[in-house]
Image (cartoon, rainbow, N blue to C red):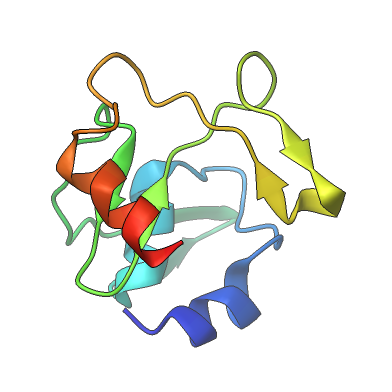
Length: 103
């Protein structure tokens, strides 16, 4: 994915009422399509992923699905955060090793 484009185009931006993980993934992958039907917007699903995983790995990026409130906290004006990834995420999980490695 083109992380620079995604960050400049989408980070912190409103992407519609029907936003969810699928829509975010489609925006990131470049497969999102708006289809206007009167005042309602639908979209075409083109990417398959496990929405319950807590993470989504790309070749050059990792998405962490964050639930606001609870265990996940943001610090330093949003530049740092704590993340609770569930019981399957620990120091030996491949994706956690990858995140630690890239810093």
